[in-house]
Image 1 (cartoon, rainbow, N blue to C red):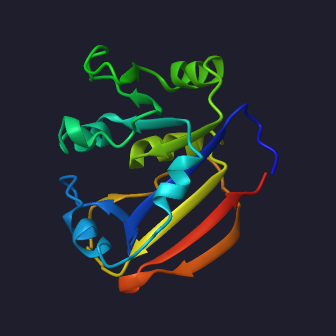
Image 2 (image 1 turned 180 degrees about the vertical axis):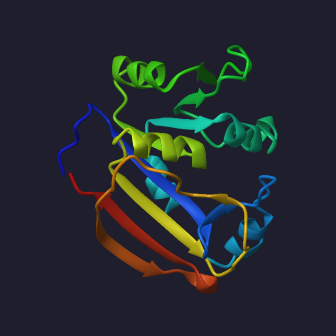
Length: 180
């Protein structure tokens, strides 16, 4: 696969079976409570290949809610895309006001593999044509409403299926790459 940008953007995310990443209030308890029985779902192996993490404000607020001792991105460069978060909120992250500023920073800093996390950030990268691959783990639950993984696009995004595997507790995980 040839990328049109100097870094690879990967999505690795869990959803409900009906495609929601969280309840409308951001709660992901429905996912966490079921994930314990899923077994090894490949997150650690995925993160071992990632040098840079990009997330939005809402995802950042969920992560810092775990507490300072639970920071999951040690050793990674972390960027937050937000128009509201204070630029100096956390020495572990760099805050960007615009997507263009973010992409410029990723390029200038030599990012190799970027983990795009959070619904709005993923949707923004997709609309910009910068996502290279997606790994989506589906939980065996319908929650009916919430924050969707995908949103409006300016054009179709063609995907090629790479693999699907069955995890424990009824979870399935599919990996796709964007066809360019």
